[in-house]
Figure 1 (cartoon, rainbow, N blue to C red):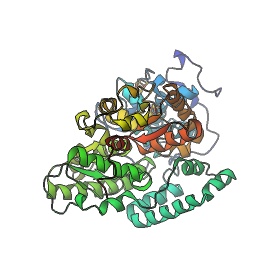
Figure 2 (figure 1 turned 90 degrees about the vertical axis):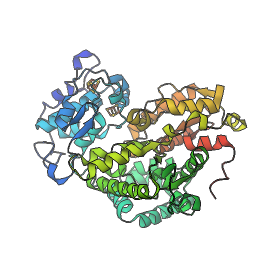
Figure 3 (figure 1 turned 180 degrees about the vertical axis):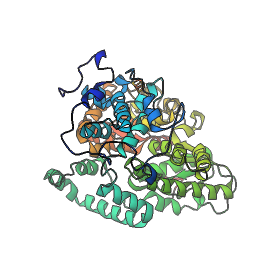
Figure 4 (figure 1 turned 60 degrees about the vertical axis):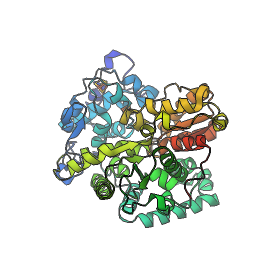
Length: 486
Ligand code: SF4
Ligand code: SF4
């Protein structure tokens, strides 16, 4: 533990961040403004206007000041529990942001570390009586970090997805071809990624087991049953999030098969990235543009086909799309449109009812002991806990096991595993120990980041178990998973 950080006990009471800041900064500011005021470029669109919290619409300062430093969330915060450091707890982070807004933060490096290490999991908000929106508050703080969102990969990925998705897909396929040659793994073993200062690339490479050479959208566009084509009265529209589209293609195809079986006729929305990558990595204006395009696509389909739910199979993306309104709090034209779109979004985890799931059959026996990991943006972000469990209990019967600390983050958290590999590894170890404690053979998850992180961890530490997406599991249980998509 850092000697400048608090010992355990009530005495720390949330003021550690403030005390730490009393020291003079040895280095240059890591925030846009030398005196650390958080909003020097508020007019540039680089920040959200207001936050939409459970206690109403609030500006950032009021939202952060809502934290009364009670510490009730401390034992729910993975980064605090694994390090014992107050500055990387929810209380410490809210305190830093408040001081940044006040221009009182004296050690920008410490504030930057506090904000950069948050998993954005939302476990703190779930247990907080005041429902302090810590992940959104942390992100607002990060948006003031010098260079945040200007990293090569964040810029290239967002620009590619937004302006040249075909070119983005082409480069991704080239990277996947290279992966199949084994060269990236060799580079990782030789320490090349460490040498170029990007150790996270080795993690990224190892988290993808099978690299697809055809993306889900390419396959779904060819399915005539999913074409809008003037259809009226469809029951669902499938939104292909980037994870299922570009990486876990089998998840996207399984979701569509499950939807066809359980809910009948639907369409492929053929939209764009939800914008979460841009939102979380400092490119807010780009996130707004992704949102506007998806909202417009939804409205266009709705004009043709009437009301329908938009189904997403990555909980992070579903949760983000449900929060689109927050991107447009100062925009009278787009705000109501974003609210209407958000109301139509459903996570596949909440959409399938137990009576729509097939009865437990021989496929369930092959799955062995089944457990469920709550993806953060499903349980903390959308309040989805009971629905998938009801379905899984029906499918797995007595083979279902409840996972201890199932709603703790797995350490994937978008690109967290690549940007904070050490902390991410500590969080993952705890998850893997719990999976081993229930002797699970199958770990069902609902977000692609969890699928990559837990899958990669299991392959290294517990190879008799596998991580599987909820849609793929439901599809497997139906026993006819090749028959619906050509
Ligand atoms: S975020 Fe909520 S639970 Fe945590 S210290 Fe602040 S007020 Fe208490
Ligand atoms: S979002 Fe997660 S990591 Fe961040 S402060 Fe809250 S509980 Fe801790």
